[in-house]
Length: 118
Length: 115
View 1 (cartoon, each protein chain N blue to C red):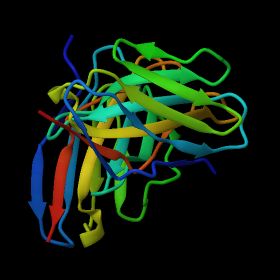
View 2: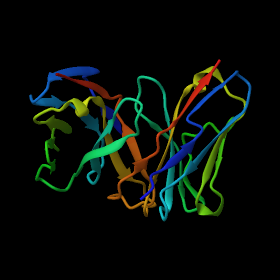
View 3: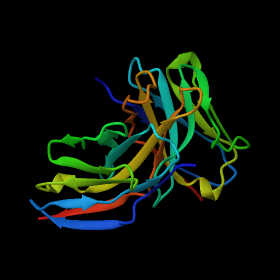
């Protein structure tokens, strides 16, 4: 079974600073995808960034970037120039397909609550 | 483009009562997911539909939970009878064809409180 661990239940950062959220996962699979989702207070979950395991280059999306270490099974999220709107619960998630090739289940970590302070 | 719609947004019931949640995915999305998010935890997949067929319901408590997706569009998730531990946010998500690289788009969720 796949597991996703987020060891930081809560974090805070000052506006305009940089923060890194940690995520580790456990799997015996070789081909998979990793995701960071953001869930703002009382709002719906949205995708922040994703990484294909077969790609060595780390994914970036504007102020968001990842540090993907496949051998260490680590997938951290770096948020640069933090903004007040970044305040949210951040979930790390993992996806593989089953043998039938049609089951793309997301396995989520418990989340990290990030607060950006003015 | 309209997002994933869910209703109701909030529901309070007593244990042993029944409750139903509704989801309308993004137009054209073939794959629909129901997740359960208990407070302090990440979402857990309950069931996945591809069109109107079930792909994965391995974590659905089938003695009390049921779900259907008639005509491959809207879906309903039902709990009968509800238990205290069913208190959670129920999230619906959809993706266009269910390929591994497709993004899942989430609805706002239904927050259920069982007293």
